[in-house]
Length: 499
Image (cartoon, rainbow, N blue to C red; front, side):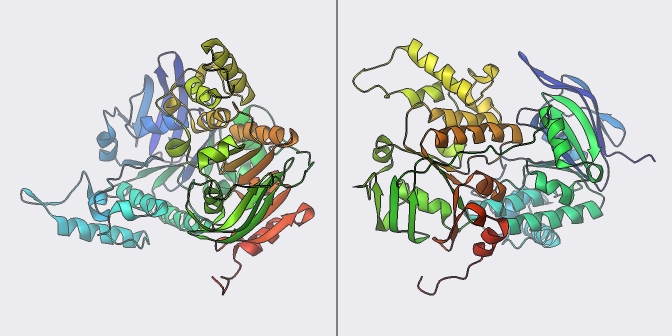
């Protein structure tokens, strides 16, 4: 049976100096379907959608929209034929209102003047149609990440849109927000909109995907109907080999507590007690807003504390700032690698070198040759491909950026490693490499904390697991007690009356 095609590529290629980012890829999207693009970071997914959205022009090949060959000279050309994209990096203007952002670039006019009232009415109608409860007069700067994403989607659907591209739309959403987004996607499908969806979260595919196209190293590996395939098969297509064990077995040899926290209080943190031991992985789980991340940021001096005591190796370190704690052997990897973790304008090697400098007390400046040798050894350890070691970090895929972030802190020998959302926006191949690093640290006798909103990740890596809710630890699970049902049951523990 022949299906109509909304957009199609024929032998589409994109080359940069020394790199073929996309190599003769055939792809098509049908009305009323969700077509998932799947592959490791650097596989060519972002390059493909950039070409389809008019962000860049192909080196070779064709793009056809409803059977007609098109050449986009910019995003406006793609929008003119009904192609609209919501990228990971939002294009909103923070100082403008929701209504102004939705209408931006296509503002209604009354004579020579902008018709702000009409733009507001259109924004209200569009948000109501999408079931978005957002005040159109609010400044975008005051919105949460999830609300900003909803505004981006509304903006993308402003006008006649038949093809919607969503790039990692659920990466920073709660489960409830994901459900809302998927309900919006279902409505768009029912109206005949074709949706290209990029995601690393395989558990989402069964819920929304009609077909999945797998890319690897810029090439198309294959397209399969989601109903006729399995996660194991998709993983095999993605990696070129069967991945039977994503999560490594981690030996458990805990020592006496390295760090103790008693009665920690800060904004959103209401009396946290915990112990961290060397030789084990402590998992930390909880819903967004549960206080799991804020507790450790307060511990690290990144948030002001109001009360409580922190002891490291038996010494009172309460109130120490971040630099002093790091000098004492505590390492913290933030969840936002771009804002807090990496120097994007620097090369990968320079970022790794920043973690090495100062590791030889009394030796003064290290010779560049020794720094370079250490950087190469660290890059090998985090499994960073040779081709990316001299490139600017901003040019790397999310997975390779995250490997660089890990490598930056492996240049020094810490006693405690705290990883806050260590695999956000990272593909399965890069995740497996990061999990091996976590295993190696724990088995080397280091204390490791993994704070994660990815429940399978927290469960499968942790020897012990703390569940947070309402700014406090509501459960401490260990061994066979670490089950999905037990964790989820504590996610929704009632608000304590003493808060």
